[in-house]
Image 1 (cartoon, one colour):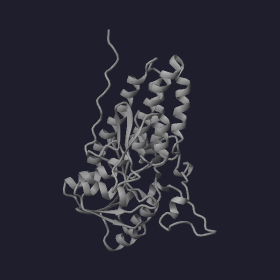
Image 2 (tube, one colour):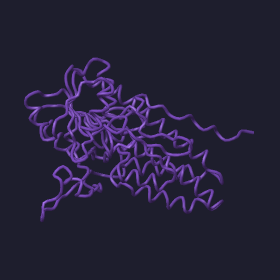
Image 3 (cartoon, helix red, strand yellow):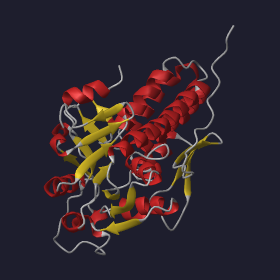
Image 4 (cartoon, one colour):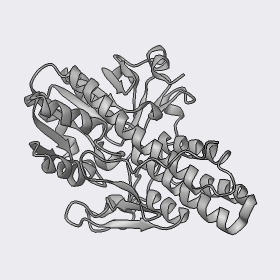
Length: 354
């Protein structure tokens, strides 16, 4: 007779950053709201704490959110099995639907929830081991996908020079290594990159706080610029590539990513700078026909007023967290299964897993 499969070991982030960990039966997250000056971790003991951490951006970045949700599902399954016995799955499914709703735009969250629901269906009365094994597989797969994308994307960079990136698509946003920053790390190792221009990425400053911190740890020269300076930079000192990640890629190749990505793509096309999107196939959404059908998360307007010290009387603000870059502005979409250059419905369909 064969027993249950052993739980896979803890996946290893090759950068050592470890944005997401399963440790001592809890979900251990690097608090990205406090970086770079204050390096702290938040420990989540139940799925509600995981849901809150995703919503409040303790953890962010589509792949990292997916990995975190997978581990959160382990907590939910364990707690429901202890409290509800053989009937644990009913309340567990409610827990995971709340988890799914924590942030509506990034597709990896729902993708991970669906995988964990499928694992739960065959997990039995004591589900923790089986659920943890699936969560660790999701985590390990993400790291492996990042490594594959790094090699493929770096292969597209033929001319030595500077590149520009927006937001953070590094180890902090993934299970480890990064999507866009994975390509940048590999291209730097190969001697193809001389400098990285980093959009500061308002209003959360993921570029200035997180991407610059990651690159500095690796000794990669980085220069932070305001988001609005990118077009002038391209006019004066055009980089070889603009390289970004994605939170969702629609079936037609439209890219949903951090607000400001669309502006960067428009400026890149005008100035002849090639535009690369790096995203695992878990971020491709065959069920969404175009980017215009994606629900764009609208965050609290107070985030915009922080730098100003508060809102002027009578003023209002809108704070969309993402925008849509049309597929025709993307020169190459890099996934772990290959490259779509340019992306489009047929090219994306070939990249999706069978």
